[in-house]
Length: 315
Image (tube, rainbow, N blue to C red):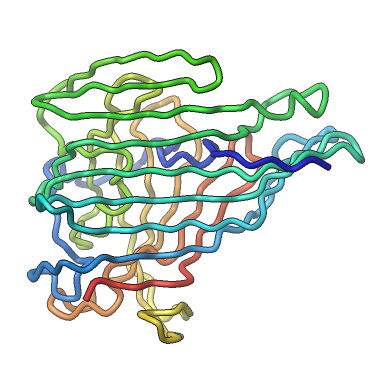
């Protein structure tokens, strides 16, 4: 069995999702609140870091002697304030993936994704720039040998925003080629976010909202996509355990399930997030943190499950 080190694309947080149905009301212009601070009205200079364990639930997708299994996953996030007063949000994912073809043919890789996003500390979290480094092994649909069970993806993607759009540089590190597409937004109806800041932004939404929609630029499609975040009814009485600011925490946390999806007819399965309730905007114990997240893998092979293990919140 071989093992290699690299970067990944399989859970690139550009959500591949189904259209939301029965949305009774949609917030097009979203004003974000800094619920990641203890007091959402008081900004601090300290950073927040979170760590998640990532496990895999197998699905009922491709069979015929072919499987993909994910283990040893770790996802970390870091939020800080730059010297010029903007937000810097960084994430890193590392996970092992083993492809099996037939009874004995296997190959294992360690895949990772690294991202960063810079955006303004305003009510719109206005994006300034982002970067994503991807090298990974995405499952394929109809393999005929071990080598065709996956495709290798090796990209560096950088986006810079200006005016009513922006410009992206996409480098294919396998072929040593580069493209630099520009983009504009179809209209100004919706709040605009970068893909790499999206998960943090969901923590800043008022949880009384039914559905909020955003324009999120998708580099590999070349156009902004409309992304919907649907907050479901609050779930009460669920026990969670994680290390909070260096001390073990175990207790009941109320949370909101959130369905994250692309508003398009040609989409896949939605992502689901569990976001801790805002128990008190001026003394918010769990900072609207994402407690759990489920991300489907291509071709119904299964689901990656992210569970919060350590949180060092801003002071």
